[in-house]
Amino acid sequence: MDRIRSVNTAIIEICDVTADGKVYLTTGIGVSPILLEKAEKVIFELNSFHSPRLREMSDVVVLHGQNSWPKGLETPLSKVGTPYTLVDPAKVIGIVRNNEPDEVSEFSESDEVCIKIAENVEKFLLSEMEKGSIPKSFLPIQSGVGNIGNAVMKKLGECPEIPPFYMYTEVLQDSLISIMQSGKLLGASTCALTVTTKSLNQIYANMDFFAKRIVLRPQDVSNNIIAASQLGVISINTALEADIYGNVNSTHVAGTKLMNGIGGSADFSRGAYISMFICPSIAKGGKISSIVPMCPHIDSSEHSVQIIITENGIADLRGKAPAEKAELLINNCVHPLYKDYLMNYLKSSKPGHIRHNLEKCFELHTNLLRTGSMLP
Image 1: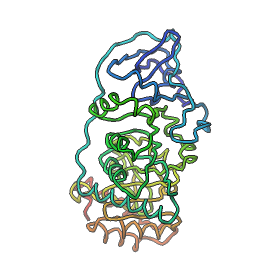
Image 2 (image 1 turned 90 degrees about the vertical axis):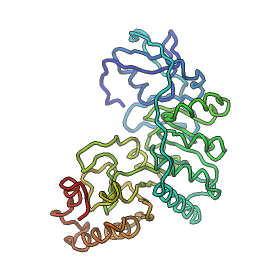
Image 3 (image 1 turned 180 degrees about the horizontal axis):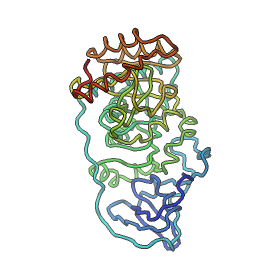
Image 4 (image 1 turned 90 degrees about the horizontal axis):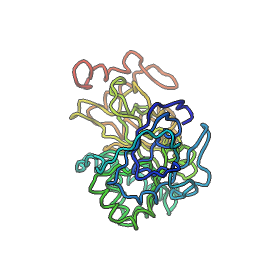
């Protein structure tokens, strides 16, 4: 965060601010502490909709230096900072009062593909427990936001063989609130509560329960690679597409059109004990394959991607040579519409440590741009 040299004006939502510069944030800590430090001028949105008891969840510590990590963070719920961040009162040029919730859309009901992906994630984690790779007490989970992540966490929350667990994650979404109330989710460290107004009201009405089980942190702590490694986090993130060697594109359609931000997926996948990416095998009714010969944009490289799961199956890429990864991904994860094409691509490509045909590696993407479908 030291790379943020200067900010002209920061607009920050808060629950409260004191005359000496103690700032109590709301449901998203994010990068607010460093913005308040770097900004020349500050405008506060004092939103009285939010519970003032959010300070009981907040744990603010500002890290400086690329190798910094939050010392003393021994469990997902360890608090190592203060319930407030600081601002120089002289920089505050205005306070705007408000009393409105944030607008967070509800997720759609899980379809058959999401449910099958969730079942495969459950199957993989149970097999790791059976092998002893995951202890019987389980490990903290990080989950990306979205319909598929929501379905996965709901499934894990309902699985009787998976013990109650903690989360160390970037955002907390709707399905996790009911899982926490059921006792399956013991507690969660997060950067933000990305929940609907209904769920947020549920939290505020039961703060005696939730305040002890949720910790809100700045983003450089919630997404800290070293913390994720020390805690042994299992990361579960959604891929836009993956190539046959395990490189993942999370953000750019056809390598150029930005669909969404990267979020914390790369942070967690680099530090995680187990790094998992999930996605449907096809999109747009089969016009798009989520497994391609080569990703035209890479957010998480093969070196930090261990497991890829689609509704068709599981590819455990750990300890595999490139050719083994490719065959495993094609056989286990690719949709039947594209399986023969990708296997033929692999077998016909020029031999090498990584086999590729540089004249055809983006043929599926070229088809998509030219005809609206990847289908050969």
